[in-house]
View (tube, rainbow, N blue to C red):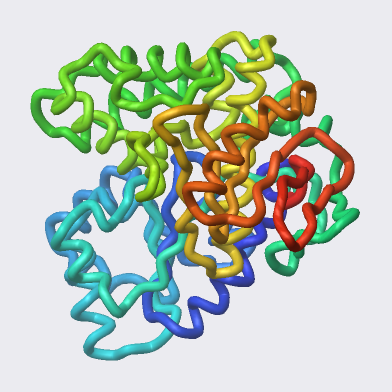
Length: 389
């Protein structure tokens, strides 16, 4: 079945389970966390706090709740009973055995101060991103970040990545053949996310219509191929930030910071390219396609770094003049494009970033079959969209 495709993060989680008494996986709702633990890591004892009875029992008596569980145990959506974290802390401090507890959540554990303190030094925490193109096609994972060298080829065509970007990496909609079914999925998914998950983040004074308005504004920016910043929205900045941060907590949006030497404000992208396509509604223009590819490549690269245990500290760059550069990676600016037409124009923003950062190399990430690596003395090269797939 499609949702049971092997996830590349599995070996990394097994390593974490040999080091830490608690292993945690967070990520978008319905991104495959449950299947990952139950079927791919083979942990039979599974409890979800989506079940009201389990949830109430964990809230009322967390110590007793844990004592009743055979270990190892998976506790799904653990953020719905925050007191469990302290109970787990006491349990593992009393007997520190690796791999006792596996916990999952559709919100960031670190957003709660008490939870963060309970987890420190006890948990190996990972994020499960939507499926990558290689996971969807069940190819072997890359052994590490590819070496940027002349003639480098991606394992897949740019057409395959574009199709994947249109569907996104969520296990259910990415394999639906009927477009109306895909739209129905995302409609229902957003309804639950907006009216249940975000409401739980706010507790009081939550207005779902504001969230919908923010998503509409993001969609309008993405159709134009723009990177949404706070100036893209027609809301009071303080209220807007509160909503965006809550949306970030449940992985609905992702915040990308500007390089310290740039002048840009933080940007906000969505958690999956398929979701981005749904929010845009129309992805026929080259600017809309650019937004889809940006989302897909953030997932591809972040996932690759995640299952290799690497820290993703990338940022984008924006100077006073010129368009934004999508990534700064190892001090090399990289700009995602949908065509190499007017290449000299596209290179201008890279040249500006290279000059500001003191970089010798910059790259256009384009729909091409193989890489063009600039000379060691400096210059601008080209990398395939599928370099990291």
